Image 1 (cartoon, protein in one colour):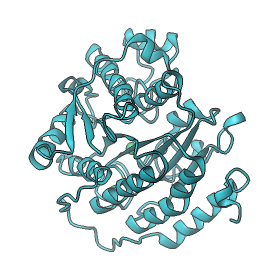
Image 2: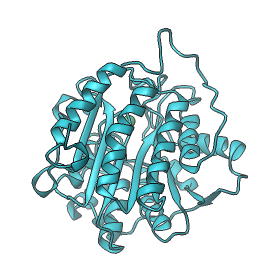
Image 3: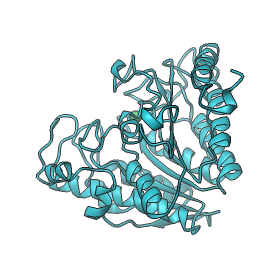
Image 4: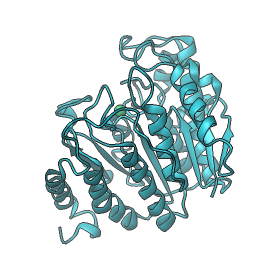
Length: 354
Ligand SMILES: [Zn+2]
């Protein structure tokens, strides 16, 4: 199955003037061209801008108007300018297109480069995100393509509070978020571990991990929460939100994944998708912050190669920190997983005996 790399040079206008720079896009594409672009598995597809109707799949009319007027409610965090708003529309269009490329069968996997808005909600921008590319991708598949079950796996180091809010009441979307405990990282302890609301109760699964959690502990979470839930839920497509920020060298977060660990997560998603949904995966690779820009392009590529079944060169750009082990926090992670399985046992037969 082939992989679409959904990218447009216009995305470089998504430059917020802080850690989220427009240069990130070309940094990744330069590495991709060097290492992978000539492989037959890949094709670069250029998206168009989201239309008004696309944005309204998720966002309120009032919010879309406010964004168009560039009136940010938090200009330090998520500043709005005509260029940034154009780029946000482009990312939203990319999310919609990526879902359709996979749904049509043209590609097994489609990856939105620099996408994966996690914190923005239906009526607000937040945490560097403006229009929910993930939400628009999923709502378009539900509303316009007849899908009834979508699994969103979010392995970004930050809890996806915006995605949670968009789908909290919708049992057609199973949201699984594996992240650094929000007691120690944005969006903060107020997020808690919500389980969904109303008809969506039981369809939001949050797994808060300790800072430093390593590759083998993540693997344990996937094997004991993600895979059984995917087999139980039988999604028609898996949407994956990832990136490089759970890597041990990320400058904003404190998780402990290596590049090999990022590749492992994507490879496990691939195996599960092949089993439960005909291999259909839509991925968003956008996070990762290091001043030299050496880390995140490699992390995005590691993930894309894992999804595509390719073994890339995974040389770490930085040495492993002293004391780092691949199974760091393994015993604590087993306890966290046990607590999650017990809490969700009333909702899922795969956890019934937990
Ligand atoms: Zn993040």
